[in-house]
Amino acid sequence: MANSPSGDSLIARVVRVLETFSAERTVQTASEIGRAAGLPPSTAHRLVDDLAASGLLERDEDQRVRLGMRLWELALRGSPALRLRQAALPHMESVQTRIRQHTQLAVLERDEVLFIERLSHPEAGANIARVAGKLPLHASSAGLVLLAHAEAAVRERVLAGPLRRLGPGTITDPALLRRELAAIRRAGFVVAPGSVEGVSTGVAVPIRDAGAVIAALSVVLPRSGEHAGDADADARSGPGVGPGSGSGSGSDAAVTALQAAARAIEDELRALRSSH
Image (tube, rainbow, N blue to C red):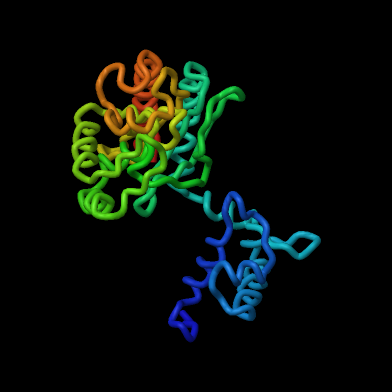
């Protein structure tokens, strides 16, 4: 694989080009891509031309560049995420029918939580998570579930790193986070008020396949009561794992719905595995 003068491989440069795209940055010029990727203009234009010729990128009538449908097609071929999403969607819809807020499916990806599906009611409350978007593992209910059940090396890496605060309820103390993760493993769910935003509460449960936790199923509920957005109250309480944690009967109903859906998804995955 040819290397650049800086030592980067061709694959590394292609990845840098593709990573310049985001939910907020969906269309760019080749020059903008080069600047964002830290590539010389000639290299950026050549890579963009090659990727567009293969269909991984596409150009519009103004010669601006976006991710191509070919990239989406290749990403879905035999993807474990697609299999998981197909198994989960009917049961996510059941949760959504009952909860009528946000229902989300997430996986662990490079020490972050990656959301691969989200269903939202038109009148649902605030939620910054989006499909193909990521959040820190320690700062969302889905991430906390995934981190609690991750390999020890992943947990230690996250605990040793900076624990950035996203919401008033985000745990930023490593010792407290370690205790919470142990409590989540014992309880089998988490209720995390204010972990991402002060106005919402995340509730999440694990999904297992062949005995291993492969995903988290979560809902985002609006917070009610006097402590919505109260940083001091969230700092005192943190995520909870007991009955009625976080937002009372709303979170209890969410835990029940999520656990039933997770069991059904696991049954679907088991059936798919035995049929192949």
